[in-house]
Length: 142
Image 1 (cartoon, helix red, strand yellow):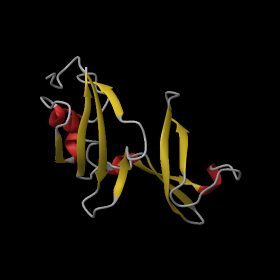
Image 2 (cartoon, rainbow, N blue to C red; image 1 turned 30 degrees about the vertical axis):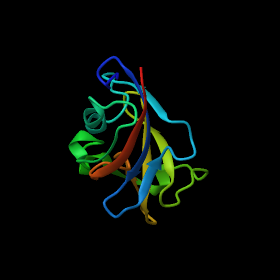
Image 3 (cartoon, rainbow, N blue to C red; image 1 turned 180 degrees about the vertical axis):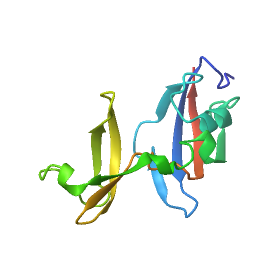
Image 4 (cartoon, helix red, strand yellow; image 1 turned 90 degrees about the vertical axis):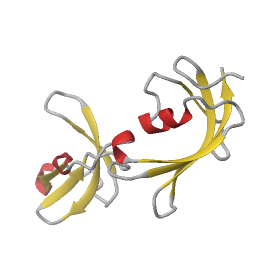
């Protein structure tokens, strides 16, 4: 039976949960997630957990932040003057926006606080700093 290893195409069904049991992502009701092992297409900790698995294998693995989306970086949180934000931009808490970096790249941010004077934007990945648990079933290895 073929095992998941670099160069193979792997398909999985999965449910990802946070430490409090909240589901943050799942393939339930969708096609399986298909990716190429060794190409960095999924988080490193999940790829490592799948290495050597075959069709029909199941596992539950908890992945620390450093093997997922990294630690929460306080330097990725910026405060900008409220008057610098155009009026047509929604500033509801949790709103995802894109800002342009000084070198011209688009960077996703989330509005985390709004006062009369300033807006706080967080460029951390929403799952940064969190342990992630995945219940996984391998449904294809080619």
